[in-house]
Image (cartoon, rainbow, N blue to C red; front, side, top):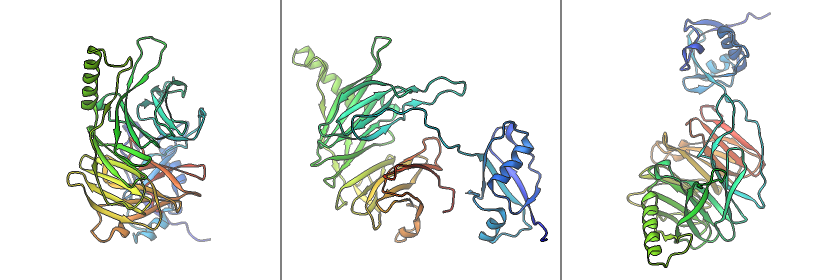
Length: 396
């Protein structure tokens, strides 16, 4: 019987003191994988009930045995491995669902806070857009509290502006329009929030697929089937101007009972895409990303209006997402069912090497979103009917 080989491991963590084990190196079997390492940490901490942990070596998640990791990275079995442990992401459980009357095209839950650890319900508001043309508002329990007819033909995208701009949100639709709305609370205790139209932006010649606000919220970008990528002025300043105009009209007794919306200023056109621009993300104030059916993902210098980097693939790009903590990194889904990452810090002319395939679905990857609290986790959705969560520290 072959003798079991062992590896010296030093466990480290950034977790609170009560979840830290001594950093003295210990010998463990080299064939251990994540589950076995998690058992060791639970034993050393005497956790009851046990908690699942993930493990990182040099920033890479451990998904093989320690021995396989050593071989893959040409490391000596006699060296001491420093292994960082972090809480594992537990698969989510569905609590409830609420059907719409038509396809749900977009959801934004960034203003909904999760329930506290002691129980209770989530707080805040969730907004959704549907092909029936309605913008709907939901509370944390997914109970409908308000709806408004937003776009003729269907809503394609709903997005909140940053909190610094107040309770403002953007919608885009098949009617070629982008609209800005303000959420307002009712004076009645039992009544939920409502929506008031602040501004309407006209400039697209076909359906507007997506919108994305800059980090400051003072500007936003829209893109659509006309191949246009437009940058607009918006935010609280425009809402204030619209409110001033509305008050002036009411004073002259020419305004309507619900107020009238301002017309958004003409958008700057960032030209380069040859077909439908399907998605846009704006992670840094002077840098935004766009993806389109011309198989390309482009990073734009907003000040100059020029494309600073372009990745040309082989299939239509359907969705993109970025994270403010890593503005040079963009995730995008394609019609070839793959989820890819592009690190634009790569050398010029070598973009193929900077793009990696993170994983795949059984159908088109139509939506991707970065976890707001983690630059390592991405969720993707597909026509295969699944939502998957990925940790980009895993080597695929």
